[in-house]
Length: 341
Ligand code: AVJ
Image (cartoon, rainbow, N blue to C red):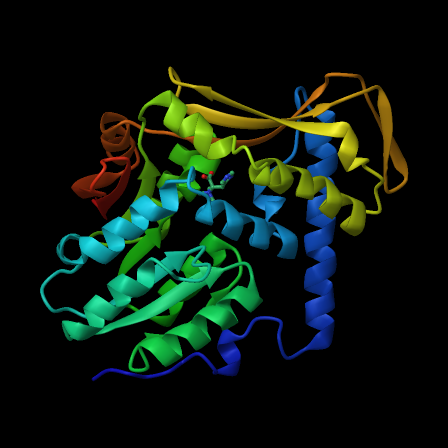
């Protein structure tokens, strides 16, 4: 059985052994964060990027969201990965040829571990390459897999998606299968999602396969409820970004004076969240002051919902052949398999 463990090779560890590189990376990340916050708040409407929701507190809040009865997405995709594993297998495996299984934003690998286990049991030769911006979550994932499926070969890649995809390609010539699960693609504006898909296509080779998780259009109440929970966890998830800005960018947002507002537009399929300023107020960020008038909005996040038809169109228009689609038992969520032409 192929079980080369590359996880601990120094080459694979970005910024972990040199304190200075680590600090520099941190400074650069903070600088990018500061720039994006200022640019976003200066645009009309004001906006902040939901990719910054996930600090330690944000990770915990997202765990709570996934456990909420209203939030169906994770349960649906888990249904697919635990009950339709043979179909996933058929969509991604070609002959018995070894391949690299790359996961973008792997997180705790909850869903993918079902697929990994199945591949292992079928005796397929593959290396699992989780890519995540968070080194600590990769460590957690590593330990978990190592104890649950000890024979699996893992190569963790810490960093930005496309940079690490390039690295994966330079390290191995094998066919690539890329997982991008959880409807993470929904957090991009539609044009950004198309650009992302084209960029992914450019970074891959003919015959490579990607498996993308899409949340499907359904009864608008079901969708809105998933993002507008009574307990206010989604509200806290949005407001936590203000707390993060206070801490990391030396700001003084009064979190009590902003209120979460959620919309779902069944025509466009966009589910959007906003924060509303409850009064005229000045917020200091670093050396600068931003004035909010009462009822002014900050646009925080889009969670785009798709029809099957729109998903097929995206594949066609970004250089992929549509290979297959696997839905949960409710038909609410879909993992689509596309092959690079
Ligand atoms: C992590 C992108 C899947 O948009 O459904 C959950 C994030 N935001 N509740 C989503 C989220 C509010 C989530 N994804």
